[in-house]
Length: 125
Image 1 (cartoon, rainbow, N blue to C red):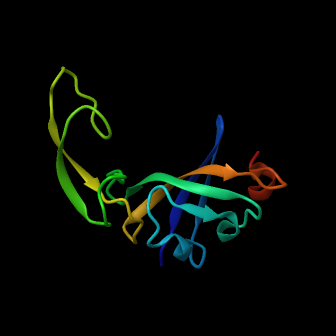
Image 2: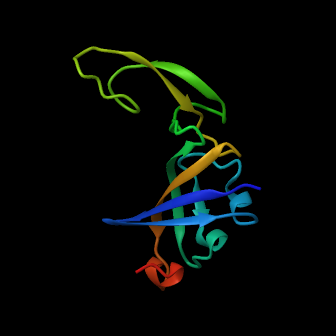
Image 3: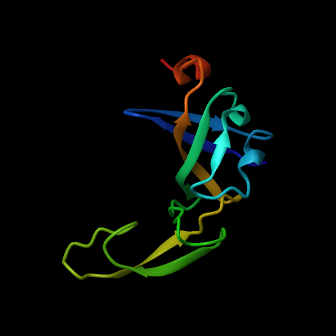
């Protein structure tokens, strides 16, 4: 059984929601940057863009790393590493940009709004 924690961002506010099968199965194989219809999670009229996520070990999904594999990259200042000194580089572990069974958390951004607000649809206060 696949279960994902979705973090949906809409301007300054964000909302967390957990989805399981069969809704979660619609996210399998999607990549960072792809759009997903809101009907998949019960938000009719909404469109979401996948912006990132983490795997079960807490390693981030990296947008420029193809596939769903976990790998160690030698990185400098930028995504996944903040260098304490100028020019410093370090080896860090990342997961590829494809959502798989090992993914736990998915970050989404609202691309197109529906008729109701997300708080009304998901019962958030």
